[in-house]
Every structure is written in structure tokens, then in C-alpha cells.
Length: 279
Length: 314
Image (cartoon, chains in turn cyan, purple):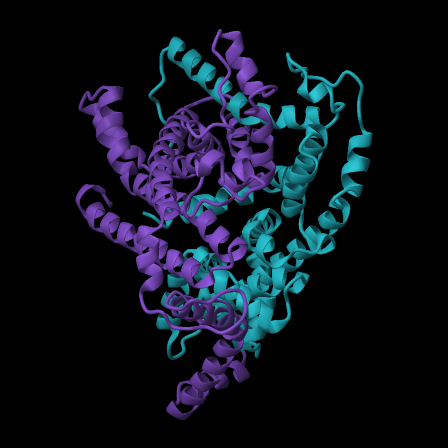
């Protein structure tokens, strides 16, 4: 419900002041980052700092895409992200439906064990995962950034909860008409599950696009790297070119902001759902 | 219902059909779970076992592996870098826990009021959450720069001397705390907001009838009803803090491999990364990983025990 703590006008005014100042602290750095990406290398280090670029340096973007090479790395990131998101949604739909609707021996044990994997810090897995990738010959290959990451306990949980909420009558009606379990899943449940799939896809996108530790370990060929690695290379190779570093950061951050603005409902719903799991 | 359908229902209820139907359902279930089971086995269960094994060996990148018993664990306890990392991780976690939850709760309470532009504010607070940590790390590396950073410029307007945020051992960890808290406030805010909206309206109505003041209602209804949410936020934030990697690396990694000036930003996972992949001591790094895992398990256990006492579940 909506609270009613603030009743007097001055209380409301104070609340607005607090919200405006604190939200500026959240947003201003991004505005400054974008503005700096359009400045010259000497303007970005000028004191006092300028807010608007005196001369627009759109060329920064052309240059940043070519060095490192950030352009290739952006393409790699798009490929990896798209496939990881598709994998997340596909495996979670199948597993989530099986856990929600089918009875089979070992179901509760498997589900409990799968959720238990969430307790294990990724740090425990990186060394053996690296060695497994060496054995598979996947080091320095995009495959290593995709195949191990097609599964998600969080997503399976999310889809399971969703499928459990669909009235059984709908499925039973379809099965009486002769549909198989797979038919019911794909023709009856899947169309209804679009919002849950969208939530999962937005999380998968964030996760894959922003991943850093794993690529850092497994990829060293510049033409196979992803954008987060490219940014770190930009920082170490062109430390003096703050304008280019801000251009690279903008290129890494902007896609997530755009996706977020279009899909914010799903982001916020997904987080609220995971938070309510604590209740 | 058609005649044929009725016949199917009747047939389904006989025992023989039921057991073959159950077999069919089990087969369907396991085919649906096959990709997940394979994935979890190959990329989770097997590595988990290997990791435990490696922690008792002298494994490097390649070459023969010799079992060394608890030597890696003993070594960690006498390794100065490990203690620095543990101490930094602890200080970082305590301050971040406070800085990323208290403002989040305040903002959530304000946004739960009848405020114009609520969803607009909510979006603004959420932007740092979705942005790439590395992008944010480099952005703050610029903002916190000693000579030309915006933060020191802002401080100079108030007559404050420039602060060596990233270039001194004294301020390094503070910078990591600020950036991490700044990034996670919006996330916690959304969870608090969902929790606040779940508080039943009748409780407030009853309290109003009894003449309880707004402040009393907040203390005696809102906060207790919010305790499961608060607990969840604290646990997840703490566990995330213990595993922090991207922020200290992107803010502080230097050419010589130190994380921050004199390892002032070194936390456990960056140390593990450095030992395993820069110093190629994989056995030792695995032992560090398991110590971290153990700490996380102990903390979750303690917190869940404590929660029985002070968390008010409906």
C-alpha cells in the first residue's frame, strides 16, 4: 500500500529535495561520462571541468571502435549475449515446466539440489572450470563464454513458480484433446509464460553483457575478447586518453541502459520476485 | 466432453494405464531436464569436486600434480596477502552493508509515499544497477582522479583539499566502498519497495483507530513487517560483498599486479584470481576459494539461526 508518513507540506518538500539530490548523484556520473566521450583528450582533463564539450568529438567513437579492437569485441559480446539469453530461456522453460507440472521419481531432490547450487560462490569453480576448458580445447574460443552458461537455477525457479500459477484446467483440456506433454507446454503454457520469459531474458542479458571475471580468465586473443575486457585493455594501453576510455565505457553501458528503459517493468518485477523469496 | 474423451478418461483411471502413463511422464520429465542435468553435472558438479581435490595439491597451470595434504590451507593462514585480503574484505563488507541498505530503505520509504514521478525516480536510482561494473569502474577512476577528477574539483569548491582516492593506500578501500554502494543502492531499494507494498493496509487502519501517531505506526508496524525483507537484503548484500571482484579490479589494478596502492583494494576473489592465473598457483588458489566458501556457509548458517529471533515472519 502507499504510505502516509509525509503529510505536512514541508515534509513533502524535504522528501522531494532528498530524492532529487540523491537521484542526481546516481545519474550525473553517466551524463558526465557521455559528455566526456565527446570531448578532446585535453578538454577531459581541464580544471574546472566542462559539462558540455566545446567542440563535439564524434571521431572518438570511430577511433575507439578501431583500437583494441573494441568494434570486434562489441560484436563478440552481442553474439555471446544473444546465445546465452536464448539458452537461459530454453533450458529454464523446459526444466521449470518439468519441476512445476510433472511428477517423477527424484523430483524434489533434484530441484532442491539445483537451488543448492546457488549457494556455491563462483570463485570456487573458476580454477577447475579453466582446466576443463583446457581439456576441451575451448580456451580462447567464444564457445567457452557460451556453452557453460546456458543453465540457470534462478531462471528455472522463476519459470517453475510461473508455471505453478497456471490453472491446471487449461492443460487438462488440451490433454483430453489428445495433446502430449510437449504439446501442452509449447502450445498452451509457453504463450502464457511470455512475461516470465521476458523477465528472465532481461536478467540473462545483463548477466552475459556485463560478465567480466570468466572472460578475463579464458580469453586472451584480442579478437575474441568481450567488451568488458576491451575496456580494461583500453585503460591499460591508453591510460592518457580519458576521452577514449569514456567513449568505451559509454559503448559498454549504453546498450544496457537502452534495454533497461524498454524493459524496466521486467527488471523490477524480477528483482521484486527474487526479493519476496526472502519472505 | 466428447464420447472419445470420456473413454480416454475412463481408460486413464485403470491401474495398468496409470503406471504406463507414469512411465511416460517420467520419460517426458527427464527429457525436459536432460540439458540442465548435463550442464549442471559437467559445469558445476564435476568442477566442484575437482576444486576440492586441487585445494589439497600443488597444481600449477600444467604439469604433474602432487597431493600435499593441508599445506595450502596452512600456507594461506601464514600468507600476509591473504590476511590483507581477508581484512579488506571484512572492512569493505561492513561499511558497504550499511551504505547500500540504509539509503536504500530511506529512498524506498519516500518513494512509497504519494510522490509525483515515483516511477521516474525509481528508474533513475536503478540505472547504476544495470550498467556494466567495468564501465562504472573506469568512469569512477576518472571521477576520483587526484588531479582532474570531478569529485576533487567539487570538494575544492567547498575549500576541501584534494583527496588521493585511488593513489594512496589510505583511501583505496574507501573508494571501493563508495563505488560498490553507489551501484547497489537501487537494487536494494527495489526490494525494499516491494516489501513495503506488501504490508497490509488494515494494520495501519487499525492503528489509526487506536490513535497511534504516524511515527509510532512506522516503528511498530512498517519496520517489523519489513524485517523479512531487510533480512533478505542484508544476507544477499553481505554474500555479494564477500565475493566482490569487478570493482576493485577495474578501480585499482596496476601494471605490477597489485590491486590498489600497496594492495589497499585487495579482497579475497581478486587475490584468488592473481594467485591462480598471474602466479599460476592453482592448488593454493583453490584452497583460498574453499576458505571463502566456508566463511560464506558459516555466515549464512549464523544469520539463519539469528533470524529466528528477530525476524518477524507473518
